[in-house]
Image (cartoon, rainbow, N blue to C red; front, side, top):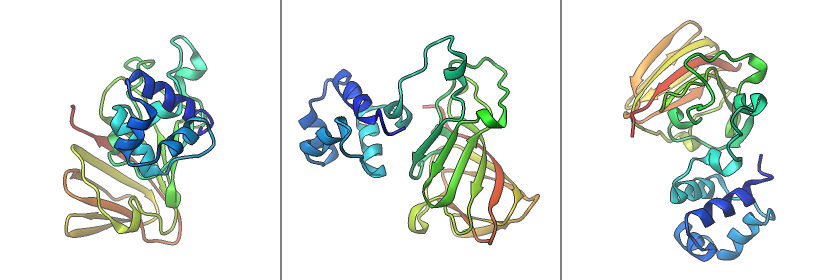
Length: 215
């Protein structure tokens, strides 16, 4: 998925009316580094990738690939899409609303869009509808995997609801830590700083629903 990042970045930068030098200045990297990325000779860090997306007012998904053409059945469901990405600050924005889905979305396991992130965290999108700021997904955390680097917490608008299918998941919300076992569930206000961690010796599998606030 990184193969076309450079050309996408350049295209979006030009449409935004930014010079290569101005983009580099605002992201605090060298113009030569941006040039190397656009020419496919270097890859940005996760932090730089998110800085590009924020500055250009696009999602990280927009930097990876062009929007599929309407009426293309394979592209429309993103069969087996896998993106490598670091921490996603707001899970409700992990995937775009699907303009190609109607009010009903049925997804076969082999057709799920997936986000494989650092430290053994995997998200699988379970349904795609046009609704904004909502994600319904299966989560998998390898032993020791955490939702944030170095035990940090994150916060964002909206609410999260989770159900543990198997394994042992520690969810820290504010000053409290809750350990969820198989069959247990929770819901919480995502504006409270929080983090997730697999404290057990086997993979955690669960179902997660995240509803953000509309912009």
